[in-house]
Length: 437
Image (cartoon, rainbow, N blue to C red; front, side):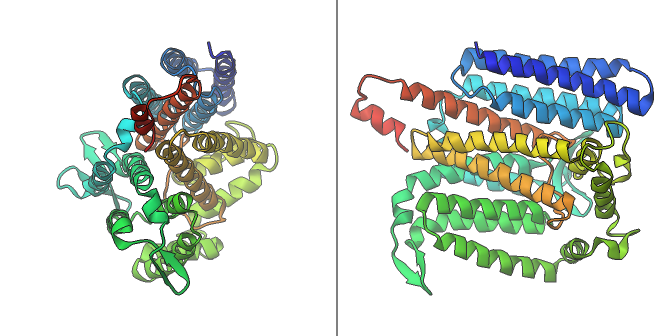
C-alpha cells in the first residue's frame, strides 16, 4: 500500500496548506479562498498520482514522489507569493498536466527496453525538438533567445522535452556500443580514442545540438547538454580522457562564446563584479545578493521579504526568493530535497539490471544535478547566470512537465528492476538477451 509515501504526502499537503495561509496572513492580512483551493487541489493531484503508483508501479521508491511533490508545491506557493492567485492557478494547472503526462508513462510504458531499441530515432527527434523554435510563425524570440513555440496564449520550450528524448537516445546508443567505445584504437597526445565509426554518430548529434542551441543564444542549455554528454561517455567507458577532452573544449568554447556574443561577455562581467553597474546590467544579481543577505539563517518569513524586487523572481530567480524568506535553513532544505531526488536516480542506476537502464538513470541524475548546480550557482553569484529554470520550482510548464516525465521514467526503472530481481526461476537464453541492452 506504500504507507511511507502516503504519510509523507499527508505531511507535504499540510505544510503546503500552512504555507499558503501564512502567505495570505503575512502579505495580504486576510485568508483568501484561493489560498485554500490551490493547496487542496495540489493534494488531490499528488494523491491521485500516488494511487496510480500503488496500482501500476508498486515496487517503485517511496521517497521520490514526496520529495518531488514538496519541491513542486513550494514552487507554487512562492509563485502565489510573488505573482498572486492567477499565477499560482496557472502553475497548478501545469502541475496537473505534468502529473497526467507522468501517469500516462506509468500506465502505458511496459518497460524501458522499448525506449532503448531505436536510439538514433530518439537522437534525431531530440535535434528536431531543439530546432523547432526556428519554425516560422510559431517560433518565438523572448529576451533575445529563440527558444519558444507559441500558439495563441500557449507557449512551450521544446528544449526541455529534447532533454528527455536525448537522455534516452544517448543511453540507448552508449549501451549498444559500450564495448566498441571502450576499445582504444589510437592515442593522440596521450589521449585515448575509440574507432571513429563508433563515436562519430554520437559526436554528430552532440555537435549539431550545440550549434542549434548556440544559434538560439541559449548557452545555458548548451552547457547543460555538453557537460551531460561528456559525463555519460565517462560513465560508459570509464576513460578519464573524455573528462580531459571535455574540460579543454569547455574552456575553448567559453572563451569563443565570450568573444562572439556580447550578452555572454556581459554575463561574465556581471559575475565578476555585479556591483559595477548596480542600476543597470547588475541589478538582478545585486538584488538577489541583497535578498540572500536579508534572509540570514532563518529568513524574513513567508510573505515578509522583498523578493518581488528581483526581476523574474518567479522563474529564473525563484531560489533567491526562497533564500530570502526561508533563510539559509530553507535554502539548505531545498538543496537536500534535490539531493534526495538525485540520490534516488543514482541508486536506480547502480542497481540497474541492464546497461541501458543504468545509463538512463545516470543521465537523469546528471541532468538534474547539473541544472540545479548551474541555476543555484547563478542565482547566488557563484557562477555566471544562464537563464536556465530551477527544476520543479520555477514558473512555467515546459520544465515542470519534462521534469515529471523524468521522475515517471525513474519509477518505471525502479519497478521493473525490482520485478526482475525477484525472479527465482532461471531465464531462457531468449529472455536473457531481451533483458540485456
